Length: 117
Length: 112
Image 1 (tube, each protein chain N blue to C red):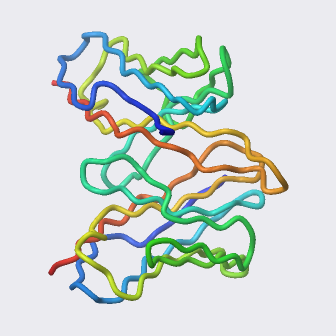
Image 2 (cartoon, each protein chain N blue to C red):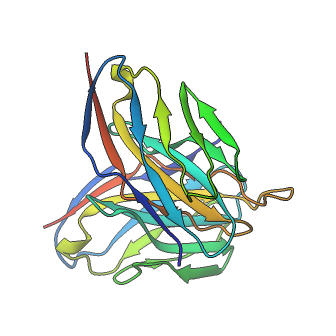
Image 3 (cartoon, rainbow over the protein chains, first blue to last red):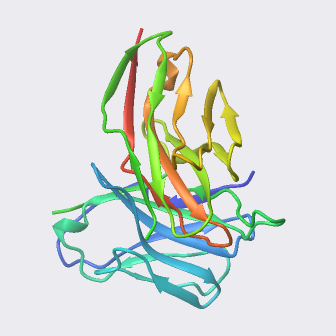
């Protein structure tokens, strides 16, 4: 079954304690990205990766790091979490579409609800 | 830049009522348009999509038509069910790009 798997689903942590949220996809997709979802703001992209060892900042990258050492995995790292990073996080993956439209569907993980106290 | 504007919620309806969620967009190129749905406690799922002007996407009784002249992609369902209670996101992606631009989301609650 095609899927994007995030872990953990829920996490409560304290300010300044480094954490990693893992993301793995089994569809051999080139493109992976991280979003955060906040009330009234929709989903905002944090970081994305076009392929292995190729990452770039999205719209709200401050306070986050990512790595893409393998095609299937794209972990999100918070070196020193702060309360304003309390949010719902989603990982997504997609591939470049074939044909003239050039786009395909993005698959999302189940989400990680992070609370930083 | 690219942006998506969708009607604010929350929207509360009775079962079998007609649902419309408005979505308009601005884009620097030629976008594909999507509606994603997020059921309580779950991730986002693709509900429907349209890749060119006048295309109609449909799924699970929902429909949306890509209107280039009005830059709109309104979501409609003729008779909603309690199980349609969810958050609905309109989104776009430019042709050849990877990045999705999302609207703020509309929370829909359907009462029995």
